[in-house]
Amino acid sequence: MKVITANFVTCAVKECKTTATSFPLHFHDAELELQEVDFQPEFIRNVIPRIDWEGLRTTANELGFPSLPETKPEGDALTNEQTLKDLHRLLLETQVMEGKLVCGTCGHAYAIKEGIANFLLPSHLGKSNRIPIQELN
Amino acid sequence: MEYLIRFAQCHENFRKPEIQALATLVGADIEFLSYNDHSPYCVVKLPDNDAACAIIKRSVLAKDITELWGQGTNYDEVHAAVRQRSSDRWAQYRESIFSFSVDTFAGKRSQTRKSEIINSFGYMALEGPIRMKNPDEQFLVMEEYVSDAEQSLIGTKKITEPRNIYMGRFLARSDRDTIVKHDLKKRRYISTTTMDAELSLVTANMALAAPGKVFYDPFVGTGSFLVAAAHFGALTLGSDIDPRSFRGKDEEREKGEISALRNYKQYGLESKMMDLFTSDLTNTPLRNCGLLDGITCDPPYGVREGLRVLGTRDGVLKEPVFIDGVAAHYRPDYIAPKRPYGFEAMQRDILDFAVRTLVPNGRLAMWMPTASDEAHKFPVPMHPNLEVVNVSVQHFQKWSRRLMTYRRLPDGETSDITQGRSYVDAEGVMADELNAFRRKYMSRHGPPKSENSKPAAQ
Image 1: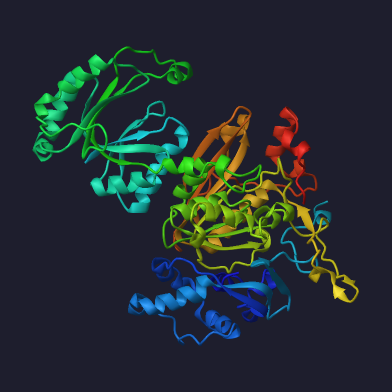
Image 2 (image 1 turned 90 degrees about the vertical axis):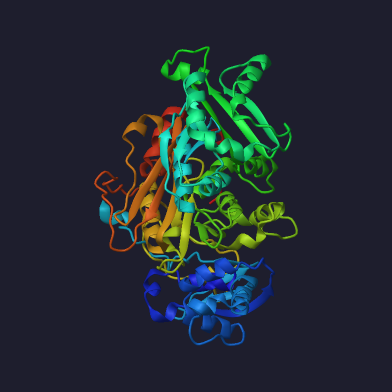
């Protein structure tokens, strides 16, 4: 799982999604791998406005990366090639291959294996938002 | 300026919507001056050559585009039009290395007659050397007759002289060659439900895949839609409730590699693979905000594979189970419980999901099957925050399937949904109760062969 994806996801439990502590999910026992990817400045510029900057700062800290600037780069800052390259490396080239993503609200740990995170919920968490069959009958 | 698009004579229903989508993508106003499902030729008005080339270079259903210099129903008309509309352009190409050819659709011309036709344009006074291979300029005469298909379908009489003749200067080829490059016969990792290369590319075009964008497929399977979106430059994100579909079965995997990734590598697109993860659309981990530029998907029909989402059959939450002191759901062999799911409920959930996660003007392109007899009264699933951009149909003998393309309306705008599907489908426990399409298909044709020979593991 890449760092950008970690910034796109939160806890899959519906009740957690609206709570402040469910995002970002926290990496535990993360095994990192750097995978080089073509530099795509256009993509970084487009996607930065969608990034939750506070969340990214937290994730970067937890993974042991140098701290990011306090405020999200905007406007002219996004024309600076070094800024874009640094973000590219963090967002698209940093990959968590093994480990867990833990929700700060419910404490559920989502496993990451071979770079694939599993967000399927066990039966005590995967509540359906539909009417159970008994109530319909 | 007027241009002639030459289409491939297939997937007729998708041709115009694809060109319209690409015009939106490149930001060009387009007007269709003539279009006929039974003809490959289509005349459009576009602002300039740059727009014409940009559109056609992305198209997979068109073959090429030509600057239209004149047209008519006979050669007198064509010559009059060419003299009137393009005489100011002849001088520009006087010295060019050129080719001049006659192309016919559903008709034939002898070599002698073709030469006569070419020579009849002698007044353009092209003096440069003629070279059939790699000329600088290609001039084309295209003749349209009536095809056998048109005759048998709508009864148009066959004719010996063309009904339309076009003359112009060739501008650009389409991206149609990619269909061959992406052919499933040569693709490293596919399954029984993999969408073919041509329609995957069309789907990506309908959803406006382009560099800098994020594309997502919530039913990623072997990744055919994402590979198509990646081909057009988007970064791609995919998930599936069954990770084996994209990871590959253990015994089939090479060097422990994620199987879907091999498809990206085959086409040199691995830099466009953002991530794959295991999840269920009804309990998605994606944040509720504008993250995605496009969603492309072919949701499970429930014909080959029964529909399942997370949850228990009775809808009641279960207490966690512990085995040897470890919570069962953290054990490596844990399989989350799944419950049957309605086809209509799923479509509604996809639309809701699209509204929550698409950026303004982002697009959802979703496939859906219908039994042939319900086709004429087919209700399109709708949502007030989504505009239906177009619906294209692919017909098969016993059923058809539709590609529905939606646009996420910016906040503050809503669409009229009174024509949409207004009913809520009942909950049930059998696949047939939940899925009107599956019920109709099975009652008439019996189960598809692949279901018996290769049951879907859930």
